[in-house]
Picture 1 (cartoon, rainbow, N blue to C red):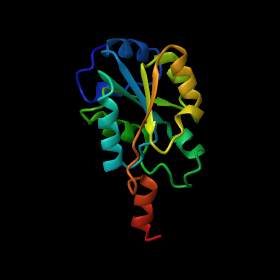
Picture 2: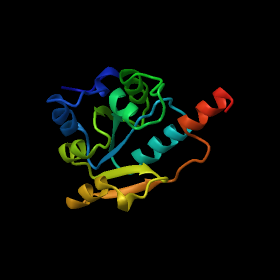
Picture 3: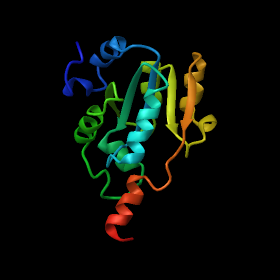
Length: 161
């Protein structure tokens, strides 16, 4: 399988994923999130994450796991396939996939990235993902969080809360 179009960058977490991951140049950077309404904070974060390696894989929470995070009954606003395609359109993103659990731990074990990235609002040393990445010599990096740029704060402004 070759990644030659926007749609090819969106890969389900199935038997085709390892083949697609194997085609990506290393070092491989991995991040995850809901990415419900793409905004400046997301784009800047993904751009900075991509600079840490040769490829960037973004795993998004499925609609089911997004709802389980407790962000509100109307979230996610955008369905998983729509969120994935918007992310795939970014030049910094090499591949987009999905995970159905609350954390991407099992997916990380499968992909074995070189670098795991989250926003600066996370305590990296407290994450199970960090322990797993470091078990094979990978790095775990927090990228500075842009205050005021989040889907939650955007929705509050829209709703005049």
